[in-house]
Length: 160
Image 1 (tube, rainbow, N blue to C red):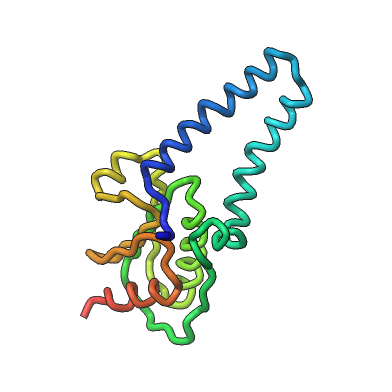
Image 2 (cartoon, rainbow, N blue to C red):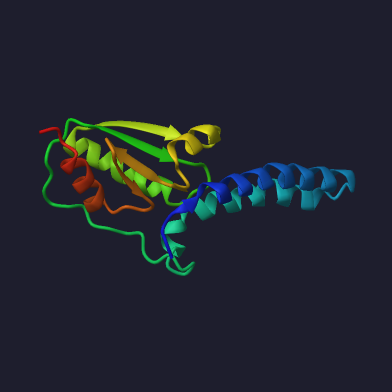
């Protein structure tokens, strides 16, 4: 299975969360079911946080395979601008963001992070259908890229 999240599914699940979560709280409050209200109040956001936080440990059982990689031994300094596009709710986005942060310290490139959560028109105008996206010049990597793949993309985009 591809290690990327479709923008459409993330917007849909985010909208569903924004509707169903408060609706559940309102229903439980209306019925005065306070134990269930507290469980709903804490468990649903806690479950979402836990899923994103521990996704690297469960990714292989969800059919995505492993998301771990090794840090490459050699780096070339790069004076390029790297654009990184992410979306709230994507479990691969924090993984790639961490890899880019580590690479930036080693390679010295400029990193611009764009959160598409509240910018669907930007995603559409850039043709972004899945996240995470790493863009250097006209070159683009979509999905969970390894540190080595990211370093190669950044190094090959160096101006001559």
